[in-house]
Image (cartoon, rainbow, N blue to C red; front, side, top):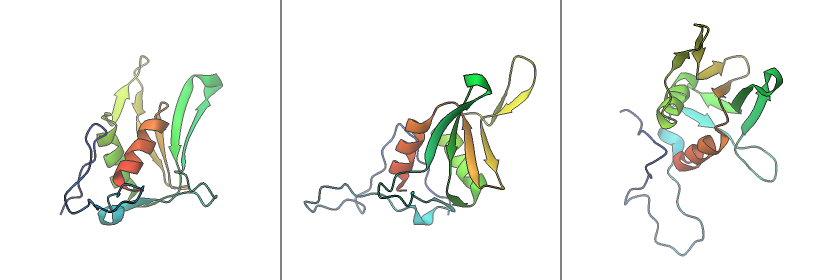
Length: 128
């Protein structure tokens, strides 16, 4: 069974996920059926480990997702689908550039551009 696709424009809800209690938090979908996981930080804020930074004198903007486990290539495919990005593109000099890449040593996902808000929203929608 293929895991559900989570696009940023759509909302994820089903009648079985809705809880009609008077709690202040809205119910989240469970990420347990996905082949990957993004753990939250261990600080008291328990925030998502999504960080935006720049390199090359400010001309290269990158977004890094840390604390990833499981099948990182599946996470890469889900991010490409959710952010509506192509896997790669050719720049002006004819070099192939990858939009979302995996650092296998540190188990980080690196996305070209400042996409922290979009990735955080996707992580919240998926249930991380």
